[in-house]
Length: 471
Image 1 (cartoon, rainbow, N blue to C red):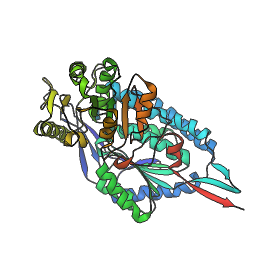
Image 2 (tube, rainbow, N blue to C red; image 1 turned 90 degrees about the horizontal axis):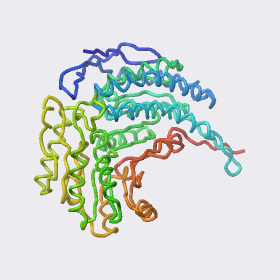
Image 3 (spheres, helix red, strand yellow; image 1 turned 45 degrees about the horizontal axis):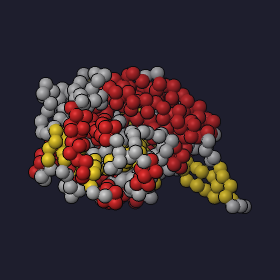
Image 4 (tube, rainbow, N blue to C red; image 1 turned 45 degrees about the vertical axis):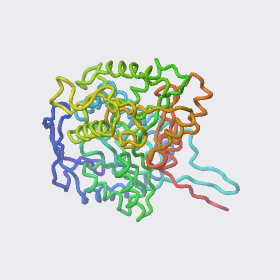
């Protein structure tokens, strides 16, 4: 049993003013593994004040100074990769394979930020003017539970690159993971107040960050519902916002695709991170004339997926993060059957032998139409909907008929055709013939999948404001 009773303010671990206690529960056993004392509005205001004071000097640091800080952060986090991975597996239930990849992405965020900053011009000449890119100010960083430390590292690295100071509100469900990470960050020895961390609830700590006039920007990753609330509140003080929100990503298998390769990739795209991923390709669009050929391939791919103990090397899908999330997924599986979709594999309930935890049977529906809720709403679990189309034009129309636009996928044996289709999909990223990630390319959504971009130059510019000096 672990007790986390400190928050991180002004370069030190201190007792919070808040007294509310949140129980940390293992998603594998549903047994309590720890408790965290949550911060409150007073703690958040203190954190903001420290960050504001630190900004005065930190905003004036030279590029090389920031690079040195990023290097120290990288080295400090690199040393604890195994501990960070173990904490993610234990607390979140992320499969070991995925957790290692997630932590590696977080660790490498600092090195990538160095690369980006080195090639980034903080001053430019435009016309007859000098344009200076200045840090926005104090940034409120709000992260979710499905890849907590990776999100924190990426956002923090970008803020440091820009010369911003930060107050971080991680998910209260990720307190053990956060504790390990903050201990690493503390060892890097950054100036006091540059980063501050307050464990707390969204409607307490998150709300204070969003309304406080001394916060210049909110960088939020999470649900579309919460993102809209943040955007509405941020308007009152004209905060800049980066919102990376939900998704219902389409995956188009074109009629010339090699389905023996495309279908296993499609199943992986749908069930990545146990299905708890905003970029999951949960709408699979296939040619109607190839549906019967594709069904056994999907069933075989799903049967090859191991659901179970997330500490095992060969586990592909771990538990849902909480009982609440488990029940949400079960409700959507029932809804799919009620809506008339055909259950190809999976279904309600837990896999045999995994009754104690929040494990879901990986589920696939066929004969889904795009007006069904299972095709339109983000489920955030291992549930795949297969839809059919007759023409390429219809496939594009179905793919774009969604409130979301975060990511999309296309498979084809003709690269020119695949790129042509990709160019017509309304999504921030389109993956062609594979599951790739480019950490230097912009990431973010169209429509209700958010606003703004993260990663690389586009992500860095989100933390800066251009000032024209005309003489």
